[in-house]
Amino acid sequence: MEFTSSDSEIISETEYEASEHELDDTEGDSEGDVEIPFVTPIEINLDNNELHQAIPTGAFGPNDPLKISGLLDKLRADKISLTAKRDKITCEVARRYLKSHKEKHLVTVAKRYMRRLARILEQVRQYEGNSKLSLEEILKPSQFKNLIQATKSVSGYETESDTYKSPSFALQTGTLLKRAIQAALSIEIQRDNPSNEKRIKLLRSAQQFDPPN
Image (cartoon, rainbow, N blue to C red; front, side, top):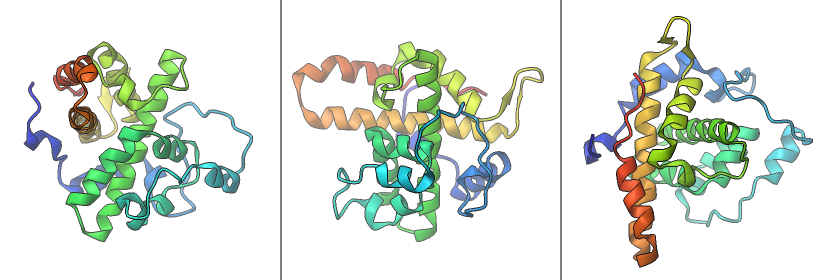
């Protein structure tokens, strides 16, 4: 299935937010929300305040949409947010969304995009036994199996019943990965470096990714 511009637009924000709340309360704005560990927790010796301070902010310039929108401050101080902020493609997906959606309330949607992609990345890191993998490195056909499994994991897939807690949630997550592929491809093309031809070819092949249903 060839990627088209229409594919890059994920289902309406209203529907997206509704299914997000159905499945996972961790993305809410309330400080009292309980974390549901779709990704196996990774132990770190930092409390939440220390972790929040440890997240690098130097990569975000004063005019970065992620900064001026207040999104960075809205991200919960936990491992998933740390992964999201440190990953180039995850940030780029949210950045592009904010540039094309100016409404303030949609900052919450961009935040959820970042955390969803970070969850998938953490899952694939566990599958591969490599905590240093980036989203960019796993957006290729050879990782399709892992991406599908990770999508199922973060989408609440139940093996015994072969069902999802929220079917649209899985589809949206798969489409979000296609948006990440498009962002990575655009970055590579803009570099205009002949040495990137192999990477560009891989990303174009990755556009064939079909989310689980």
